[in-house]
Length: 533
Ligand SMILES: *[C@@H]1O[C@H](CO)[C@@H](O)[C@H](O)[C@H]1NC(C)=O
Image (cartoon, rainbow, N blue to C red; front, side, top):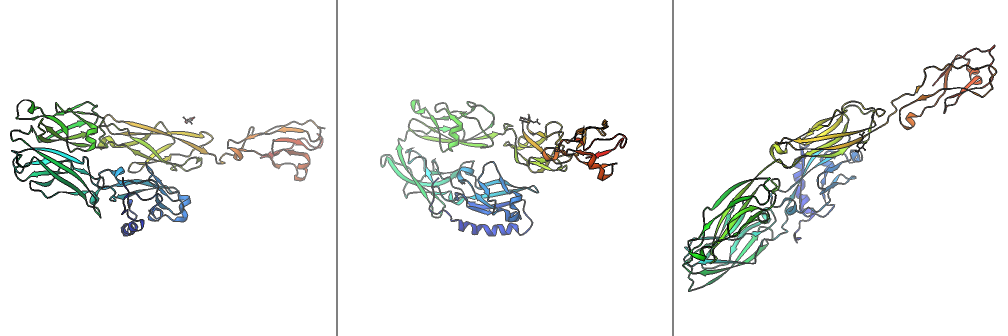
């Protein structure tokens, strides 16, 4: 990646963005918020005001805790303004390769109440790459008996930019013998092809020099060049010929390295050593040489690495056959990769709201769960469940999202902590699954009244007892936590006259010990009753 001089200024693109957003928000809130930014923006550049675009008020932001939930954090939300900010380098070529439309999809999560918003940021290309030829010089040999109209495919130049900034055209310097045309491989890659205009005469001129230029569509355009040297060979040589121009093969995604793909053959009419043909890749993507091996003498193609359907699902292999006189022929092989259920689904905890007060009503959201499976079709369809019998249920929320909610009221005194295991299974044959566990703490609320160990205490006190001596001990317990579980004691009622009560007995608020305040006289007082709390 090169930095380009005409990198768009932030001001310029925001002006373009605004009418686009306005038209989006005229009606109801869309399912998905879309922004559009150029690649390579500086860190902390503002993409848009996400809070406003989602209809959230800035003053509610601290409570709503608006944030980005994504696999890779290209963006963050400014907690004060609600602006969506760029937080990492966004290189379109690195993220999207040759895809014409580059979109970063993610979710924005807000709490109280829980909302998920789907956000898409379209990353526009800037012309930061120029077309480049793999070789600065191309050598070709062409027999002097070759008929005008014969074509010679050339390696294309590469330009990682997309759309109008990508490679647009080729041109050749003015010359008497060759024209240039542009062809396309079945997978859409464009390449230049030389066309012979007039018969070549070795006696007149052995070498021809050409300059090939590739130009992109940027403003201003960038270009790259390569030299072509053509040697005119003797009329008696014949070029090799492939048995087919195009071969088609399907391969299962799971085939091991070394797996045979196909054998190509080109024959040469020349006798003896001249008939010995060698094979090589020609006009191929770098990927091809990473995944396929070509035996240069037998033409046998084998696999070199494990395929990943989810990354690339087809390849075009260009093959060149050359005889010892360097006369060449070309063919292409279309390899289609067939998906297998090789990716287990993933369970991603997007948000978890723990600890949870024990008096939360049934239906309280505890966590937001997202699933993902890189396989396609049924292999990538995922359903979720909970392991074991639990106090919780999973509710489908939106595509690939589940809410974990309480199914009944919880009781901290009974279960202070839960390990909730969520499993995700795909519909592949055989299915793959995975699971994740959320530890949920339950916090106390003062939902238990203290309970006396005995409903009634009967105490016998001998008369003439010493004053201020303890005569009984009551005790109550409360299973709540901390201050909610602390018990204190007091006398709330008695059959004694209120003024007499305090001169007869007291209770320690802290310990529940009951004290006689004076010596009792059996003649005067036989029994009395106290109600404590
Ligand atoms: C939950 O899992 C953790 C970690 O494995 C363990 O330490 C804890 O005891 C578990 N709690 C319960 C209630 O099972």
